[in-house]
Length: 427
Ligand SMILES: Cc1cc2nc3c(=O)[nH]c(=O)nc-3n(C[C@H](O)[C@H](O)[C@H](O)COP(=O)(O)OP(=O)(O)OC[C@H]3O[C@@H](n4cnc5c(N)ncnc54)[C@H](O)[C@@H]3O)c2cc1C
Ligand code: SF4
Ligand code: SF4
Image (cartoon, rainbow, N blue to C red; front, side, top):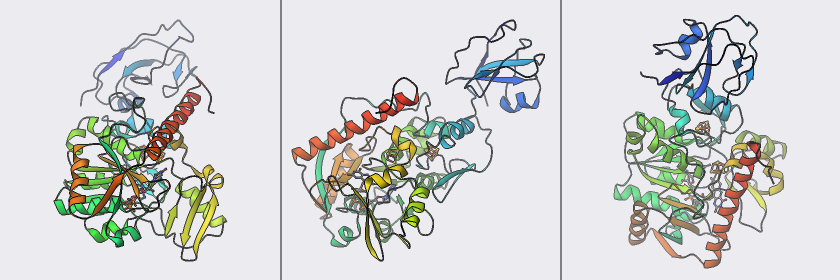
């Protein structure tokens, strides 16, 4: 294990030295050359310089405060060995910004997912920082994909069209046109994928990731659950079990985590090679599952939810179907349940996917499809040839509106980011 780190002298005479704390590499302050703290923080450190007594403390790189004991000997180090897990926990999970993509879950034994929450099982000492490299809500030089380039609000694309499954059973069980389920079935038949990471409806617990391997398992997952599901945890498990030719259906934040995985060190490339198809879903926001559950309980909506829907504007409602039928809520009532991390999300159309799929405003039972890559294009062509999918042009008006909605989401997120960094205010 090698850690690159440098030592910097801060004058012992200065009471409150001026330090610009960079986000990365991070400043660490360790007291006692061979103290357990020092050894734990820098297990492979082979050189430690002593600068004398300091009267300052760096509060996890975030602030400076005087030490209690002014005679204590401390070392100030600049190092790449920031503790990945603790940064992720502090900045993302405890900060309430986790969007439950699941990229960190099952990557190591320390993160788990239970009923709508990412839980930390134990402290991690690894210096690879893979969780931090992957997390779509964490900054990490080398893997961060923000800011998203402004050029095209819906990201790179080859064609945009409308589509729906020809198979009526798929359409009846799907959220809208069943395009996602139909193309998965084509990908299975063509041998493009051997398994697919999907999201189930959840039962007594939150929706979660499942590995589907055939038509029935794909149909069991059809439909949208408007909350995070940590489904990428299933991808991590499949990769560690040696699987390849994996398809992934996920939200834009999950496609972003996959794109970061390609850049992740040391084994990102190898892991990415196991994924052969990425199908992204459009997403404006998702709800916090636990808040949603409490909200529905309070509203007297009990039992299993059979379907959710958020029909396109001007409907302005969130719909829930149980065995007793549909119940509608004004969107203003569910907006407070939106995951905090979604307010920072700049991507509505899953720009890092092979194919992105959403609804078509004003045309019930159809999907908008953005074809982005050769893989995506070939699959759509094959699905049409095989009689699984029918397609047509996306009306110009819908296309313009899609671009506008994507642009607006990005601008809102940028405003929130500016507000959070203190350089501006949220509108
Ligand atoms: C949280 C969320 C927000 C969305 N917001 C928008 C939006 O603003 N505008 C828009 O046009 N479309 C949105 N969609 C997409 C839309 O609801 C449909 O998923 C999409 O149009 C595909 O429809 P389909 O009939 O082809 O899907 P189906 O054939 O029914 O397949 C749906 C697939 O979605 C997967 N899935 C379900 N829930 C989740 C989840 N929580 N996380 C990850 N994967 C999931 C399932 O595994 C299934 O394979 C959203 C979806 C979700 C889950
Ligand atoms: S957003 Fe994803 S990667 Fe980040 S902490 Fe949450 S589950 Fe983990
Ligand atoms: S708004 Fe962004 S972060 Fe939130 S669930 Fe959708 S894609 Fe993920």
